[in-house]
Picture 1 (cartoon, rainbow, N blue to C red):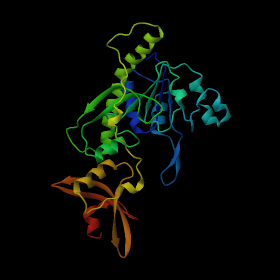
Picture 2: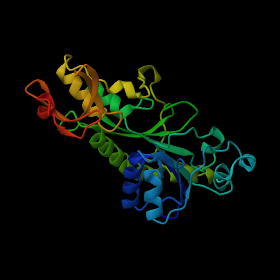
Picture 3: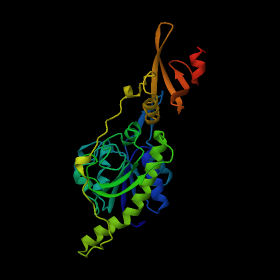
Picture 4: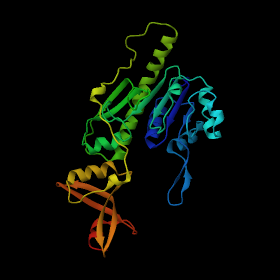
Length: 308
């Protein structure tokens, strides 16, 4: 597959893990498409997406359009960053691979490659469609998880399925960053297995050859069984310490990366927000270990309780 002309669309760390597994299998994209750099941290320094850093470290060209043009030549009317998407329209592609890109890709562009566009999704579709499948699986206490490779269409996580892999972790629940890496790496390995067969299908179809019965076909999802996830908001991380202990721990695991979990206490007549940094579930109790009180440094929870 080193000779296949592939464009890779992705942005966060999840997409990096997928890329790393593809590289191990000898699949290297000709170009990486990712979101623009964003201000980050207290200083609001412009920070590149993780995928951009990985691609540049591996000498892979990167483009970062603020939006993708929906047909060839359209981007000439846009900003220079957007005009970079003409590079996609003006090249011949075998396949687009999409993994957590985070922006809408126009249908005409998805249909441009000879073998179409495949997506890595971190759930066993049609379950957990939408923007927060990893967090939602943890919150639902659903350890029968997995990844799906699907053909992208115009609807969210709706396209026909090409392959799936089920994973049942021995330890559960996992924190979001651990589950993210587990699913992303499995998705990258599965995609690497799929690519030669999928591109081979397209080649046979172009040559009007009879397909091998062992090659891949895309099967429609069972849409009646679909479940949907919601966009996570900052307020979702609020924990009720008097509530169900296990559900609090699931929330901590799910929101570890963002938005984090927190609670409020009254101190000296003031309502103080306390961010939970580390916690566990022990003997049926949600056990908080490390916190960062508003305006203070990180500390042991027991020190905070004692008023230190």
